[in-house]
Length: 282
Image 1 (cartoon, rainbow, N blue to C red):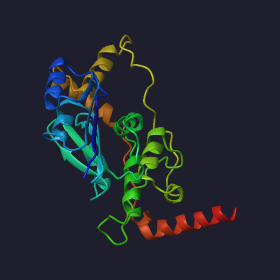
Image 2: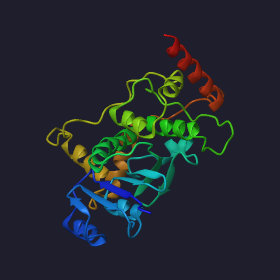
Image 3: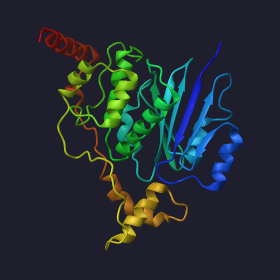
Image 4: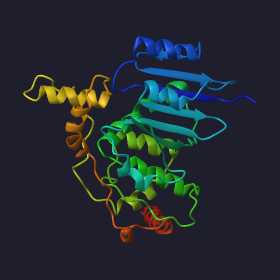
């Protein structure tokens, strides 16, 4: 039986070094390699080694898709600027998985796309999904709630009638990357609408900057240090990281919501059903 396995890695914070490119090339002679990405496509074989180790060593984003198992969307997030404690409420079986290393948090979201795409379509889609990493680094946890919705809708959560995690702000208007995720895993629109009823509006979520950060302002040394911190430059000193930590942590939006105000899955399904009926009558 022919089995399809697809791995794509992307580097967002910096290009790969020559040594890293040489190492990646040694893993498989047919790898499609650029200074910022690597793609492995298999039909009868599989990745030699541990793809998460390669992600931790060289890249920031990995997508794994397979014809015989669930896929994965994995982000490498620097511990220095990402607070893993803030997303603990979303750390639920079948929703996300967290692996913490000395330098990074590896955050995995399961994927189970129902639609088959061409390799070109996959590559375009993954480039869009990669933007979710920037959003997570800014404290935007909407994709984590959407991952919970998907798991609940597919009845793969362990609890019979689970309580929803904290509802993040801004579910009424999803980003392009979040819309791509919804499309890939096929979350019903009425479910998102039902969830958004309890989602507060906020201007705190900012899009990824479209232009490079300036490095010639009066705060140039601080800005350069911040860029180095995100890129995890080896010469970045610990005192500098400590000095910057309070400012970078302010970008996160704590998903604080009283437990008593959260809804059970059965309630969300009932609201989504009402919305669906209302739309069918109009």
